[in-house]
Image 1 (cartoon, rainbow, N blue to C red):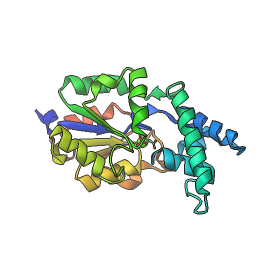
Image 2: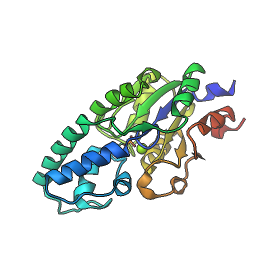
Image 3: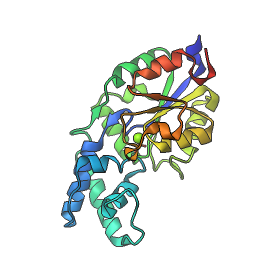
Image 4: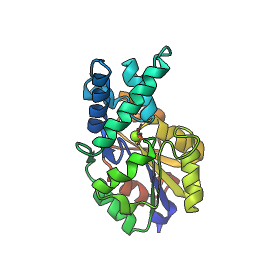
Length: 232
Ligand SMILES: O=C(O)COP(=O)(O)O
Ligand SMILES: [Mg+2]
């Protein structure tokens, strides 16, 4: 059966399984407010998510995706501490699953795929969010952005998951919303589907040449049924 070709599916979290930007934006703006800085609208902050909490805070203090090289270290450390505290208080108040995610994970799980998460989000936040959304039982392994010495776009987290779950990269599929996911997967020799509805700094995910593009999460079922990029 073709479905067995991809035994392991590794998912990105923010912008792929969950729309966490509203809670991240609230925590960013409460941090900026505490420091006496002006807030940003949610759409702007959405474009800053995907490289972990440290980079998100640096972007917020810089007011741009490009980080201000002259950013004061002490201000950054203070802002990071405030942000982590604020976000911990409201991890899943306005965060929602994207359409089709629960049903699709259920089907993949029932069909016997191993499922894992490789996110750049700090690990401490991941399980509480999955528990609140009643998703935690689907996953065999979860890595956060601080779980290993390197995070996406480095291939390390993806290769680590392949080793941990004893599935070779050729039998693994990555699903993500940002260029970090695509770059990490390509460097790991893993096929990758890019979803179009996530964050990716406001850029079209197709620009980074994933093996396939999905407008809706459930499209990955059809991709797997076709045998992925290996052909039927
Ligand atoms: O930058 C983050 O905190 C989350 O990133 P993710 O898209 O890898 O889940
Ligand atoms: Mg993402």
